[in-house]
Length: 169
Image (cartoon, rainbow, N blue to C red):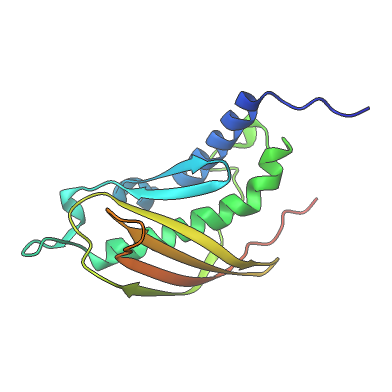
């Protein structure tokens, strides 16, 4: 007998709890003010503008380190989200499993190259990551960040990550 599908709202709530647990597990994300918008399986990182993010007040421009951290964080969260997606969809992750203490370990950065294409202006920024390759041990991710126009990124990055070992069954 085929299992009856769960109500859409139950699945959406489970997805949102998993995403919140991922994001809350990184204190620096809270400090920078990064959040994530979820539409189905697609995530968009949002870096909410704050005066503390300005590196050069004469321009003013977003600090390069903040930009790099935003790109790296977006890559890590999207990569982790992608690896958890099947477990979330199939209900193998329950509500009590979704806390920063019980979430799987994040991938480790092997290297990341950031290209600063133009000045990051004093306003909200957005980023999306695309996972080019994700295996058991290694992943490659590209990220673009923009502000007012999705087709005019102000920074982009390519990162390589060491994937955490799969939990023992």
